[in-house]
Length: 246
Ligand code: CAA
Image (cartoon, rainbow, N blue to C red; front, top):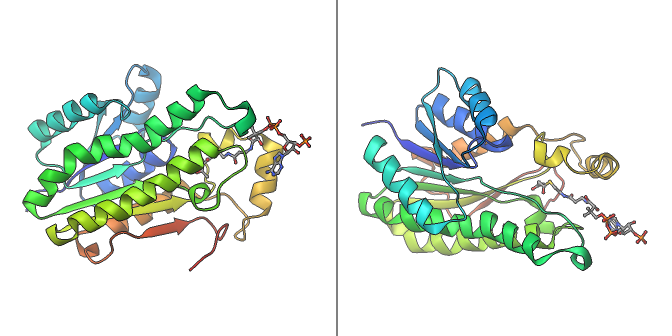
């Protein structure tokens, strides 16, 4: 069997980079899809993944047609996409009374529309071939809500609704769809939270520390494995115990 092909959106981001590396080390050909026109950042990424079967493609998940073009390019150059990890995400934090309409639109467009835009172009081929693994990177803040994140919490909760609905549609076709909900991890996104606020949040984490991107990547790898075909529609929390539930 040829190597499985994986696309990771937000692939050069804090979690995305680690997910790309982990999937490549597990024997997949990985395409990191992310915004182009950031030469330094992309050069750094290429250095980080040096020696691994990881390739960069520019694309904006918020743009439906651009996602279609990206998928067609990957399929033409590398073959059909077996694994899709939707890890592209942004924050525009602010209390609702201060939130601009543009902050709402940007977060919903990238974090939630982006999942539709990618899945819509990828899933038909997965169901036709009888194999696929989709993992949506949601958030603990989609499960609990977070002060200053009406936009982000709504998008992340919406992602898991999408996960459950699509999981039902494709379950008989060998395609699984799951969410992973990270807690606060060592990423630039979390480091952008004001230090005093962040310190208080970490104090409330039972494990007593930030998560490592590798801890999220490991969970994604587990769900994308060929052997993980009986796990679908699930939301796996990886949050140091910040939110516990049935
Ligand atoms: N709960 C209750 N009240 C709070 C609060 C909280 N968590 N945080 C602040 N407040 C109160 C303040 O004490 C203040 O009260 P007073 O008006 O009575 O003095 C008031 O709310 C401040 O309200 P403002 O609208 O003025 O808020 P602000 O502009 O000062 O700051 C904020 C708002 C920018 C959202 C800031 O609280 C913040 O950055 N919070 C962190 C948000 C966060 O966790 N983001 C996560 C980003 S990382 C990520 O999202 C990754 C992931 O998936 C986990």
